[in-house]
Length: 566
Image 1 (cartoon, one colour):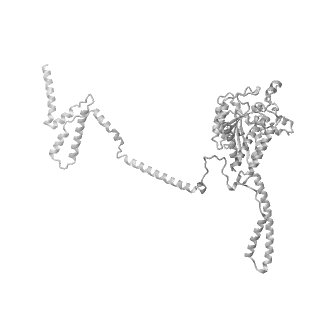
Image 2 (tube, rainbow, N blue to C red):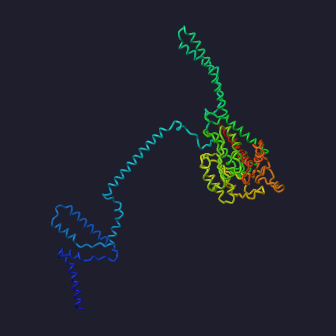
Image 3 (cartoon, one colour):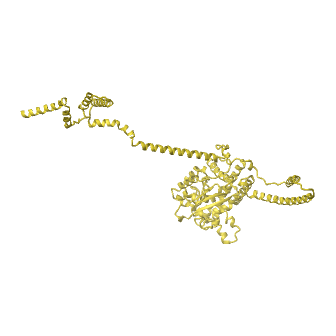
């Protein structure tokens, strides 16, 4: 035990002797410290220890800078520097080094080393060159735009905040009248010119008589040619005013001719359907939102809906470069006119009925038919998105007849709404009009029409999009509103006018163009109301008459608005 204790004492003394040894020999201190292990604190150093360590590092840096900048260092100074640098310093722990490194890491990331500087300068130079090129081309583009601006572009434009249906009238377009040539005045002017030319170019006296005779002969021949040319010019002018106005302008004469044609059509249809009231009931009241062309109505939806269709007519009439008024139809076999001749489809009948009104306006009515059979695999769900592919994108009015496929489908009205909204993205923003062979929803008149489902939400849809011209016509409701008692005919006489192959609709037994038909089979065929589920020629005539009656009345109001601004 004593030996162990003495050994322990010697070890302790040896440890003390080793610590004090650097004061006598620096080399011994260096060798000893190189083999002495570094002790790592078990805990994080406190703030005072960190501060003491920082001050010692700062003092050492100051000594290094001072000694390196002095060229006359003495042996004593070198010895002091070596003594200071070899003096035992507390070694920073891992936690201390980590703490000092964390305080400077964000600043080191911002520094750009020497190897990165040339690349940064190259990219900066490239960006400056690109910016200069962009500015140069923009300047060139502005100069090109300035050169293309004409004096007309800088003129004052009309106030767009004020509504004008038509463009302002110009003096050149105020009145277009036939050209009247005053023959007497022209002959006097021509004689005066001839006298002046004779005085300036008079020949010698011996040839004077011959020259005068020759001149008189030429003058007579010129007079005859002038009279013939004047007659031809007058004839061409009259024909031009009757057929096409100069530069395609909608003149006052053309307006009067169009109004007369529209009035004749309205009068003919009202007479054909037994008077004004019955015609209105059958062709204007059989829509989701009945049309009203009276000025006394206070229904804002009806007013907005009517203004849309009137505006459509007016703009087509006064657009100088528009030569056709296009009605495009998409739908099923009903639109296609299946089980009928193409001549008997409602689109072709409408062209023949309403077309003369547009001919009077110097235009042509075109009814495009994109109807397709149900076996094609398409229906309203996808066809509403293809309207500008199936018919012209420049249609003025859109017709929709996919109603058979809508029965029992809860997404039918969604498709209609989609069609209305997509139509507003077309160039002429056409109103959408639906043709339905059934009755108005919730208003049954005929016992045979129990399959006509319909939804009361259709009325809400029509009201909501009235300002865009949307509406739906129901054929059998139009027949019922005319006054014929289909219920009594069915119950008492067992006559169903809408069964396949039945001839006569209760008002007429044949179409107008079939009245003079000599072939009895063809004449009987033209009196069929329904072929099966497809309408026949007589029903298609009623549909064509309904659209023509509505559009003709709209055109008459459009002509009144146009005339007020001419």
